[in-house]
Length: 282
Length: 268
Ligand SMILES: [Zn+2]
Image 1 (cartoon, rainbow over the protein chains, first blue to last red):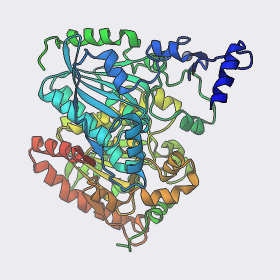
Image 2 (cartoon, rainbow over the protein chains, first blue to last red):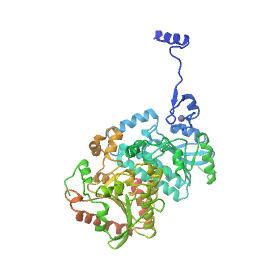
Image 3 (tube, chains in turn red, cyan):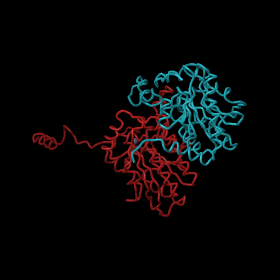
Image 4 (tube, chains in turn brown, red):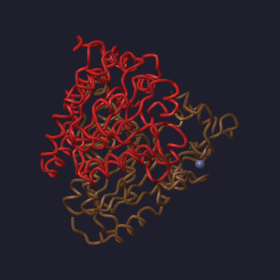
């Protein structure tokens, strides 16, 4: 053990000619370029080369978006059942709970953004690719119902690979459940802002993510319904690089604005205030 | 009714050539049918047909996904895989039904929404989402029937309803067993195994609270006796439509929302 230690010291001492110190690097999935990981993280996970907005944990999103200590979580302990008795589903989730500290793929609650009260939902793609099963559906439906009852605005940060396969048809029905809850909130005059983050696809795109009064996307994030490989398989050709990116969806008319992460908090605050949500009522 | 078949055996029946399609059923169930075309935004998607007609003399709106009965028909209707304009046509006709106080009857029979460049560019996700939201509060009764394949969000976009019935051998699923096997196990050849564990049969739908009724098929499957299966479907509709029409619309809407609201399994 000591010998190993001295080996390292020797190498360092000798000018590191054999083994230079390499800082951990981030390889951008969009531009494929390398940047120091520390730089990427300093920018809250934005690629310094191409401005791709990388994936954040729900916790990180809360800390950069919401007023300090304002977040009060709903249903923090809600956990999934196994509606179609899918083999190893419960075990897989147990592992994920340990490694991510999450109970499922969305965190919901109330908070303030620069003083404006709001109901927020934040998806976390580390938990089964942010897929929508019973818990995601139920938490989102409850969040909208709470907002409807209390005349509050809703801001949803979406990130999802789509349906939770392990819940079969029950997963599909969450699309109807969440869309219905959004509609009732809308019919009562509530403001709903969607922030599409990387990646927003499948059943989430085909339900509550596409129903915002105002739809915002972060730069260069993936937004679509069908997976790229599925489409390439159908049309038997390669798709252009920018296909299904935020900028593409903006050009096609499905995104109102593309907003950088460092400006998100102030844009959301302005939009909330423009709709009269400026008094703290929570 | 047949002896209980496995999910896989039923899947083969659903894909049997000659299984009746919505175009076969309409003339046998409804009278005075007039097809209406187009979404008024982009075009007319032949993968979804819609129109007005009468059920037992009562005007109704009919919307359904169209499977071809041969290759030519299938090319025309894109193998029942709708583009956004198909779903927007469906929504237009549903809104029209609401205006004229006609109940809506949806026939689901699709492998799923089309996965292609044009569908993405024209917002297939938005089109499906919009239907889910709008059908949930449509102020007229909606009955949906799964005829054969109920594939994914593309099926659900015609499936937000007061009551859902499913034909005995039909399936309803989050995606095809083949897609399921290839995504989850990276091996599409395990589709039979997938079909058996995915819970996609008519009885599964009733157990899971997704469907309210199973419509019996003739011995050997729907294709063996078109008159009989049409009669069974009509009998179901003739009972359900008046029942739903009699209900107070606000009660109906509350029940519709609750039906979907309670699907899911979690520990609080
Ligand atoms: Zn980059």
